[in-house]
Image 1: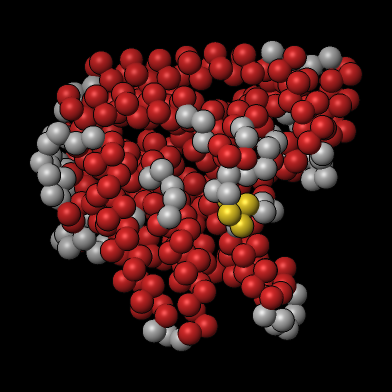
Image 2: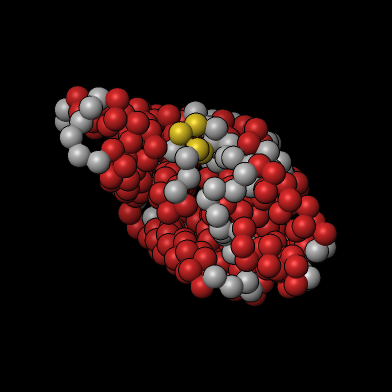
Length: 361
């Protein structure tokens, strides 16, 4: 285990190592129950270990380093468990969105639906796939809880961390519900969509992971932990919102090679994002009629996607959203100048801010 200096790449390597060790051990325990579970273990192993940027555990390690404390193998084990919470969220999100692909591969529910069909099992292939993915997502969450407690720390040193960890998961579920409720309303509101972005992404992806790292590093120093958490909230919340807004742009304009999903997938799903709220607010009557008719149609053709993309750009929504992303990113970075955190961690946080707001996937 190195001391310093850390880089984003070396932190990710340690997270990957901790995840691999835990997942392989857990898969072995699962398949010992019976050969029927080998497909479950294989799917969860592949989904977790073969891709993913590890944003959440990385931010957690940066929160830890911001305190000036040295990362330990036990800390990596505990903080890397945040990735398994994310795995659960992605698997369930694909069910809710009825997505066919994730990271360029079949989603878990489509994978098991296909297996049911190819093995000529009884009953509905679609229901088998949905049920399997719900259970596999639940299993990832169970593993996350166990992994968070398996680093070897005293339980008294985990109490503050676990309180934030649990709150993070509650906020994630709240954000997910706000997201599906917003789609069900069928209207556009930039204010409501920003609230979804805050709870579904900003708090869960950046703010709370930072808090988790601080709490784990300072288990017995609540006053200092609260102070650092407050400063890093000023960094994490605007950055997290910018992160989600960039995701909204990629969901409409990103290529399949970049996002791992079909081009314009968010348009087919009818996601009520800030981007589409801006487009609708500034649209002409003709453009609004087009948006009302086409957005949310699962059968949208590539030419219809292209037409919608052109009209969204014509409303000025993309330009307006890019300006908001820039403003939020600047606000986030500016907050670091007053934060009483370790200087090397500050440099890494600045690096992350640029990466998450300028990313192409």
